[in-house]
Structure formats: C-alpha cells, structure tokens
Amino acid sequence: MAKWGFKIQERKNMILVAGSANLDFVVRANHIPQPGETVLGRDFKTFPGGKGANQAVASARAGAVATTLLAGLGNDAFATPIEASLAEAGVVLQAVRVSDQPTGTAFICVSDDAENAITVAPGANHGLRPEHLPALQGFTHLLLQLETPLDSVAAYAQAARAESVCVVLNAAPAQALPDALLQSVDILVVNEGELTTVANHQGSIAECLERIAVPIVVVTLGHHGCCARVRGQWVLQPAFPITPVDTTAAGDTFCGCLVAALSQGADMALALRQASAAGALACTRLGAQSSIPTSAEVSRFLAAQAPHGDGVVQALRQFCGLSPSA
Image 1 (cartoon, rainbow, N blue to C red):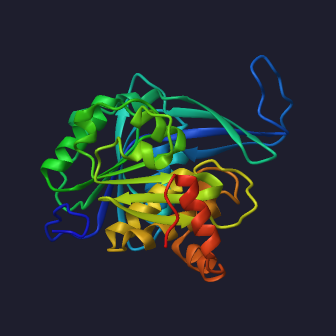
Image 2 (image 1 turned 90 degrees about the vertical axis):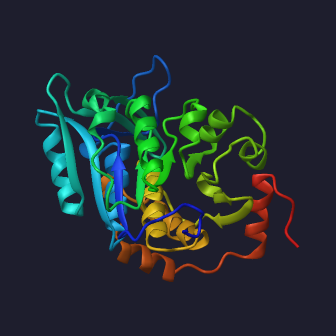
C-alpha cells in the first residue's frame, strides 16, 4: 500500500496524461480588453499549449519521469509545433487523429501586469473518447483535466481506479463535477475559483474542503502559495517571491511537477515545494510550454530561496481559514 493509501503494484514511476493540446496565439498588450473594447496590442507569437500537453511537458521536464500524453489532434499544420515541443521535452505522444476537426487553439491576451484572458476553441480535443484510453499496465499515475469531454474524463478515471492507478484530476476549467467522477479521484488539484465551484460553497478554503470527499485536495492560491489537505492533515507552502511576466501555464506547470514528484516518492510537503518553485519560474517567462522549467532550473531556484518565516506560514494559515498553529 502506498503512502497516500492507494495501491501501487510494483510499477515504475510512469505517468499518463490524458487531455488537451492546443496551439496558443498570444498577443501582449497594456491591459486586457473589457467587453466591447478594442486594445492595440504589441508582440504576437504562437506557442504550443493546452492543459494536457502543458502538464505532460512539466512532468517530463521534472526529471526521471517517463511521461505519455494521450491527446486529440487535427490533420493540420497547427499540430506540427505541438508535436515538436512534446518530442523535445521527451513526452511520448499517443495522438488520436480527428479528421473532421482542427487542432485545438487558444487566443490569449497577456497584459503588462502578467494577467491573461484566454478563449479556447477545443477542436480536436472534443474527439478524445472513452475508447481511446490505452492499456494502463506500467503506469502509476493518471493526470486529467477538463478541456476534453467530461464523459471521457470520467471513463478514464474509473478505468484507472479499477487498475489501482493513482488518479489525479486538475478540475480546470471550473465546472460542477458528478459525484461518480469525484469518487474515482485520489488527488484533486484546484485553484480558489475552481474550489468554490466543485464545493458549491462560498466560504473559506478550509470550509470548502470540508465539502469535498476526495482523500487529497491541493489548492493553489496565487501569490499566497498553496495548501493541501491530506486525509485530514494540512500541508502549507507559502509562495516564492518573483516578478511575473506571464502567468499562462503556471498552474499546469504546478500540476505536472507535483505528480512527477509524488511518483518519485516525495512526500506532500516536498512535492508542493518543488511544484510551487516550478510554477513560480513559469511565471517569469512568456508562453506556455516555452515557460516550463527543467528540474535543474528548479533545483537552482530552490537553493537560492531563504526559508519562509513563521509569520509567513501563519498568514497562509489565516488565509486558508485555519486557526493559528501552536
């Protein structure tokens, strides 16, 4: 029996990510336009993206983790840079070719204060069906998101649970989730807004977590840091100080690195620390997969960080709605 309570039967640390792959069209501007407003942008670039592909790249770059991505792609030129980025990162791609849909795209405006607004055209991502899940022999972890059809996500989770594969769900973009899906999830990863949606509650972080019946829930909290409730026990990780450039894919980087660390036997405190550092570094660079750091970069970053003081940790506890520690 593994530390977190799910059974892992003598497998190597292999991760399967099933999810979206997009080509991102990114424009930088002074600010994100309001409804009806036209904003004159500046730089324009395309970057490989999509939550599934981003998280697979983050997992692979975390080091020593064999990562496979199951994703739907169109038969078009937009798929080419995505395939090249995955190959460069060492991700094994199992592509489902969807003949009647283009490769997914995302249109992103990034403001000078590093905020972004994203509109996704799913395209071939909607062609990922339950029957496309490969054999799970050899995989220890399955990482899922919500940019592909919900019935496929649920089917993959249920199949992995039946094979004693650890199921990790990043519930993004936010939507209400059926109980049957949550019952198949071992680790749920959400941000504050997603937590509120899944819990169907507007209270504190702690109050919302009490309403979610998943053994382990990890919540990313932006510049505050992150927290995890692990079978009733809390683990807190304050944020690292950075000057952000672009927050695109920071959450995906966090997820991929987190699962990679857990697959290698890290406890939750260490996994949160490594994932937080990787996500912080991703915020200092432009683009999605282009911003995801390597394990060596994360190690150098962490080596340069001063320990968080007790006041910082207490502030994070208070933000989460927890009583002060003794």
